[in-house]
Length: 249
Image 1 (cartoon, rainbow, N blue to C red):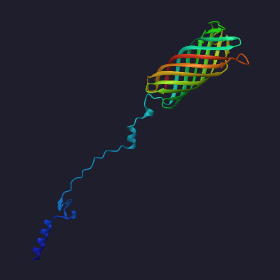
Image 2 (tube, rainbow, N blue to C red):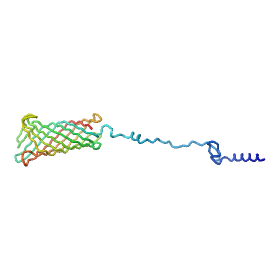
Image 3 (cartoon, one colour):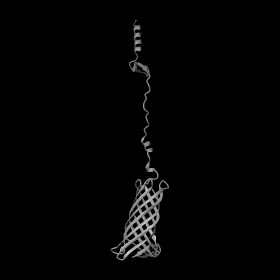
Image 4 (tube, rainbow, N blue to C red):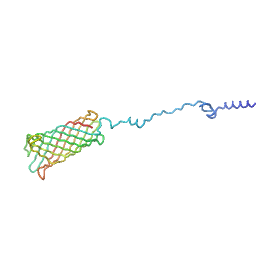
């Protein structure tokens, strides 16, 4: 009789189903009093997160990109233009002027992308300039009018057009050689050191990652005291030039 009662109780317990996961065999779980196999969980796909090194690689590396104005700056330029100097004192009015050759060189570096600070040296020379004194004048041979200046230059490049504006504040001097050859003989005259300002504009085209060739135009204004007396008059100078430039940057 006792075995029959125990068997009847087990049958009833099986008919009632499970009450917890422990009542189920293996990895089955209890759901609604029924042992079932667990369903695989549905989770959102996890996208890989790039490491800091990978994130750096996908960003543009401006420092090494070509066609940027950074680092060492070199610019030689050559051209032609017009040079004039005039002065008035008690003895009358004097003017010297003529077509002139131009030569310049700048060296410096960038302080920011496209912003250049450099030292700028340039000069102009006119052979057989027209010399006028009190309205009378001519162009005597073996006469050369020269102008030279040196000072700090500031340039700004408009990219990607590669257009630039430049300004230089410089110390300057006029020289005049009359008679004799260029390097010997004749008589030399020079003004005192004065102050000059130059303003330039140019356009360049890249021919490599670091070199650009272009065209440049500039205007110079200068004021220089004469060396002839204790109360010297001032020579006022004006020059403009156009030419070719070669820039490394």
